[in-house]
Amino acid sequence: MEHLGKTTWVIAEGYIPPGSTGSDEAFISHETACMLNTGDAPANVEVTLFFSDRDPVGPYRMTIAPRRTLHMRFNDLTTPETVPLGTDYASVIRSDVPIVVQHTRLDSRQAELAIMTTMAWPAA
Image (cartoon, rainbow, N blue to C red; front, side):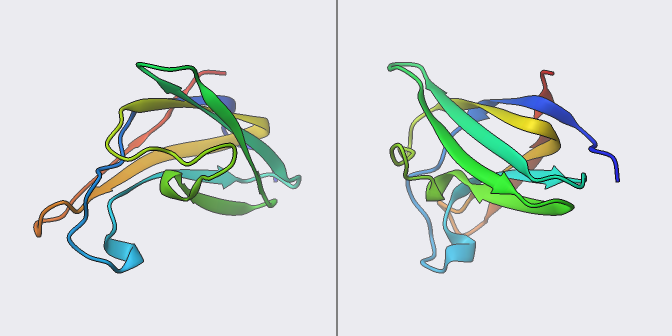
């Protein structure tokens, strides 16, 4: 199957709420980059984070198997450093093969949960 998508994606908006109403992982406030690799080769992905008050951090590296999806929670990124909670950031996602990227946030700071999702911007 052909590789659908682009090799560079941008998510200009990023923020992991610092609090959650629940302790179950499904209800912890989080940000996710949902990435789809439709091709026959693995996608080697690098994520770099940008902040308003300090130098960028990254790359965070991961591989998406052929014809698979990866829902990468920014909360789970730890190397080279943990993504800070309650801090604005943006991300640039680069892949060696075309992929598709969607951005999702779950905000569970109050009992009435809020979720938003949108396509990332395909830069190249």
